[in-house]
Image (cartoon, rainbow, N blue to C red; front, top):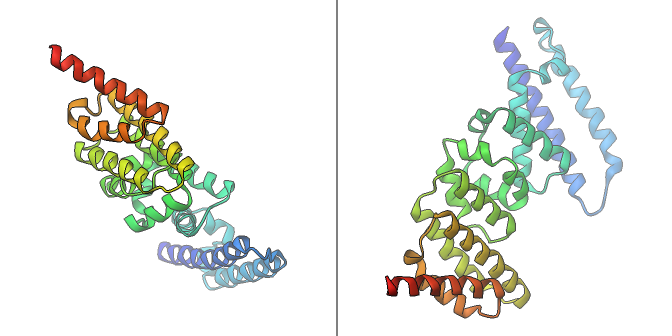
Amino acid sequence: MQLNQITVDRAHYAARAQYSAMTFQLESSTDGIYNELPGIELAFNKALEELAQHFPSTKATPHESAGSPVSQLCELQLWIDNAAQGPLNFKRCEFIETALNRDMSLLDQLEITPEKFQDILTNNSRLVKDTLQPWSASINFILYVEVILIMPINLDIIEIMTWLVEHRKLEDEHLRIFITHCIAYCGRLTDRDSQTRQVKIISLFIQRLLNAGAIREEDYFAELSSFCVEYARVKEATVLFRRLLEWEQTQRTS
């Protein structure tokens, strides 16, 4: 009976996955073809009814099957897969956040490769930011960190790294790679306003790292000084440079 239940669960997930894929494509369509959704839902419900008839001994209806742990895990995998394909709406993000924050062990039961995590981070960075505790507790934590280190820099990525620095002990090499990446990223931006915003974000982030003792001035003095001089037009970079000069003066007089 247990085997039949699992079979029902997996088949139920397959039906839901097919239904979700079709509705996800329609919801993402710029044509707004919503009139097809009722027909798809009818086909979906019919498939579930036929599925339940194949396993009468289990006495499992589609709704009962959907409540089992296996189906809950399958549904979570379904929305995680969709999160890698494109932006999720609030309700779906809330479902994932609630499930992962309630039981952090679920994350390691899901199929999430570093490549899939990168897609999730690209399409739904706030989802990752709101579930950082489960991600940081994962057995694949280091692999996920290595993905974050190479992502395009934006406020969400900086906030994710700030949280990790404050709540997890990151390797010194990881911080060096990320800071070097931040500096290089600013240099590749051609739009002056975008570059100014990034320099502000990164300068404040580095100040926070220094205040927290996560990095030391002596380890980054040359690299950060060059960064500050290059973007001296940005107030936050100037403030950071002043701090570096004050540290250097202290070293000379001590």
